Length: 108
Image (cartoon, rainbow, N blue to C red; front, top):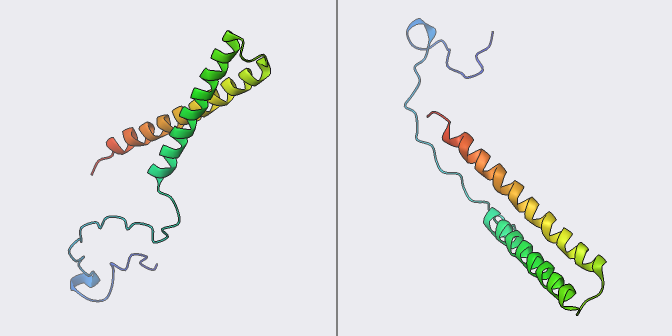
């Protein structure tokens, strides 16, 4: 049977080579492609977009209540868009928190 890790060989006593010192982990390198936005940039743009949709929905509701607007369908559509964007951000937040809790439980 072959040794996939290369730890067993003909050198050394008993045919087993010693394992050298363990090198410390290096931090992950940053992506070399500068044209791709970072996770932070994408997340912040989505937060800003959800905020804009929420403000649009609020102003649409106020305009409907004051009589400046008569299309109920447009108001419902604006509120549905804002709700969907908020739920998406909430699910991303929940996944990030779940991943954080999982990493926190790891033993080193």
